[in-house]
Amino acid sequence: MSDMTQPTPAAGLKRHLPLLTILSVAVIGFFTLGDYLTFDTLRDNREALLNLRDSHFALMALGFVAVYIVIVAFSLPGAAVASVTGGFLFGLWAGTLFNVVAATIGAVAIFLAARAGLGQALSAKLETSEGTVKKLKNGLQENEVSVLFLLRLVPVVPFFVANLLPALVGVKFRNFLMTTALGIIPGAFVFTSIGVGLGEVFDRGETPDLSLLWAPHVIGPILGLAALAALPIVIKAIRGKKEI
Image 1 (cartoon, rainbow, N blue to C red):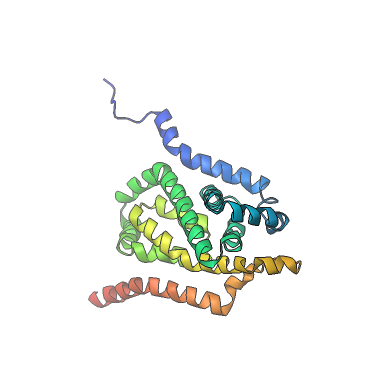
Image 2: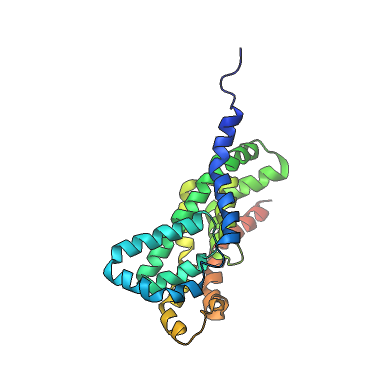
């Protein structure tokens, strides 16, 4: 008599389908959308977008958030352009809010898709692991929130990696959601603030300078927040050595 609990190949493929879809769309988008989701496109359509915002603010806000969610969820090119556009269209505070909400929802979509497929299988293997892998897994569980905040606050970590990696190692969804929503606020604020002055940049015939993120007065506070996020890990490590 066959074991009815064994997953069929079709069921396994279905479980991986969301992540496979995201990866497929991401690859296609990388090669096809790079020339469209740009500041040039925004500049060429600025008047139409501003008129639509003024006449249908709620509809424009919902449409912007929806497009941004798709960009993040499918890792399409143009996330930085979208963040700056939020400030250009809606101002600093509303723009930052829309950017954070959209980026968080998009990140959650990737997380859930990865956890349903590869993450489920990998997490099961980690649970039965031994030796160094087990120590790393236990260390992650003990410092989960701090590590997730570090992934968000350290600028060199790609956003897609910060969405995918936590799902593959089995972090708690509530911790992922919280650290994403809070951890992306500093970066979102900077990009949105660039967008607030975008009209003047376009009037001068220039392109927005996104290198502002690396200016000392901007990157300094963000790295300071990253250091605070890492502090609990350092304290636990020091206490562990003293106990030994």
